[in-house]
Image (cartoon, rainbow, N blue to C red):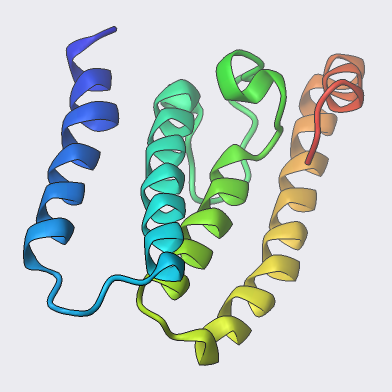
Length: 138
């Protein structure tokens, strides 16, 4: 494990857990604990996915390289997927179910964004991307 990967996947989440545990003044409920677990897991997996994406990361759809290793070997859009896990966990942790509409609105927006990326990747990588797409989820 590289030093950068260790810092982002072990130390940062551990420090965050410690900070939340020590400083959170509210009552701990099972739902809040589940939210914290989802929040931290989502952040950890987003970080791993982002590191695995490497230089292929961009805000707008671009086709620099077809990343098919790590989390990307099973999931085409792990940053989007685990972003939803993170947001859902945050809403549970903060005990703010009234903000679930944010979560529900983001789902179709991310699907549209993923489809735009898929079009760009398919145009650039053709059959290689279509085969990858057939072997992965979302």
